[in-house]
Length: 253
Image (tube, one colour):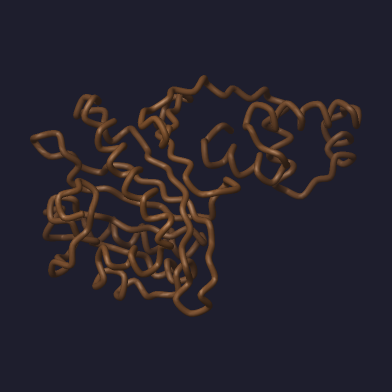
């Protein structure tokens, strides 16, 4: 793990200011802390040059039962403590595969990509396991093209099982899915939702029933059911809850 491009070590924690060397760093930190107060999703910033956590939002505790200070202090040992052994390979594979993917991307474009993968995490207090989603995107790239800083967003997984590894571009609908068995990135076709399908997603998120959607959209009950089936097929999901989660995660709205 020591030489892996996306590993962490237990080196002494440096302040975010020292790494960013930016007089406005405290404002950035305040923004992250403000966001963490408004959402259940948690954030962390990682310095890959020195392999350290630089910032972990306080609400990370809701996922794993550990304080942000504990996670920073534990470094990579946090994952060995919190992630089931069976899922550690997913983390290592996702990070190594992403590193290889970015090697073929121009340096000026590397910060436009997002790595997403799912794995289980164990709560330190309740010992219960939850399936979560990690999304990483580079913040800074050094002169050699290696990722220097990255931000990670943690949320509940939109998938039914662990092991889904994807890369997305911030402005493009194309995305790549990693085949863990054959060890290659497979480009998937664009997912394009019709206006009505997007509306079904948004109304479903608001708790509308099929009948209520039909009345609101001035469509028949069967037409709404058709839109839902089309969504399930396009997003490769089995129910509307998964469809909403996928559409939001993949920014299809």
